[in-house]
Image 1: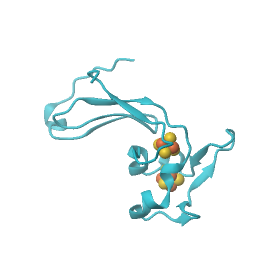
Image 2 (image 1 turned 30 degrees about the vertical axis):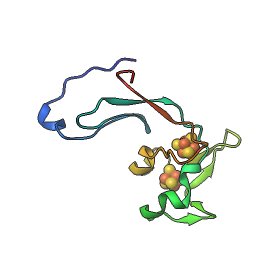
Image 3 (image 1 turned 45 degrees about the vertical axis):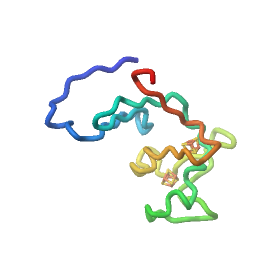
Image 4 (image 1 turned 30 degrees about the horizontal axis):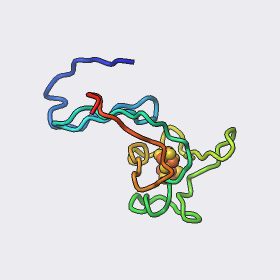
Length: 112
Ligand code: SF4
Ligand code: SF4
């Protein structure tokens, strides 16, 4: 899908722009940079909900993970957020590069 739109400069100048498909963060554009587009999907492993990653957010911790992390009711081995689509913004945009199992990857919209 190609998305093109005109927005007023004074609304977006100097701002970080976020693109979401539902609650799935799929794009980001920082000032003076091109769009970064998600091209590797989240496998819902739940590893980024580790206490070490989220400690500063003040979320409750249980067994080393956020206490809101749930087993997916339909997909064996997958995890989901107990907040559903209302999960915190910082959780939605956090795609930790330090987790080897993380399957989320990004590419530049200009192909670089
Ligand atoms: S609030 Fe949800 S997405 Fe955020 S760390 Fe907890 S379980 Fe993970
Ligand atoms: S570590 Fe990566 S693949 Fe696993 S749940 Fe978090 S974002 Fe998804």
